[in-house]
Length: 251
Ligand SMILES: [Zn+2]
Image (cartoon, rainbow, N blue to C red; front, side):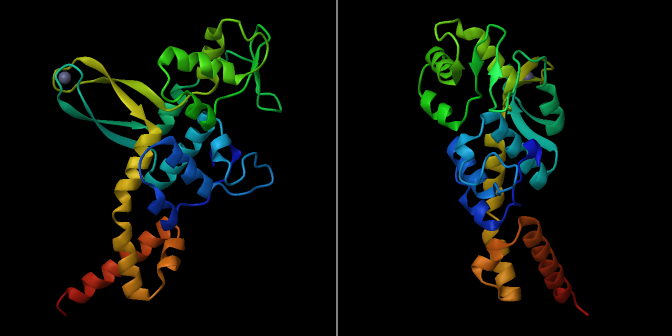
């Protein structure tokens, strides 16, 4: 999986816990899915310590494993309000975020160094929580202070913040999109974390049906069924439904 960190495959227990699209929900989901490994910097239960960009990469890997690389979303035109469909490749979107490095690193501690000698770390969920509710200017100042590891705390935070954005890009951005109706160019906001969690929550409505079908057919317990990886559970349901359809057909 991306970033060299392993994630277990999604099962019914994980899916049933996705309620909402906040970072707290994303962190809780990853905490369940992170598995211990020899070179694993982030053990299960520590997803809150992940840099936000690493969390995003893991969420992208989950999206790809569950739904594939294609993103299909709906947006409204900023000019004429006409709703339209937008589709793109998640991998291509991730590639488009790469650019020239604005800092040296990371070193063995995961820190980066600016040309003026300031050393900084990448922001995590803890930083996200600390700046929640602040006005944008305050939030940026606070983030720069929190992420500064060493160097002049009174230096201009702008280069540090620019380097943070470049070294730790997050899939929460404005995409260029042309309205098919009025044919004017506009932007569409896309945030992978919300998109993934909303998609999982929508799919979650089928979980009770899956559990019911398998329980009736195989007499497995609720826990045994929720323990199944999602793909295996869906395969069982497909087989059971094919069998039911075959039985309904007149001989
Ligand atoms: Zn339009």
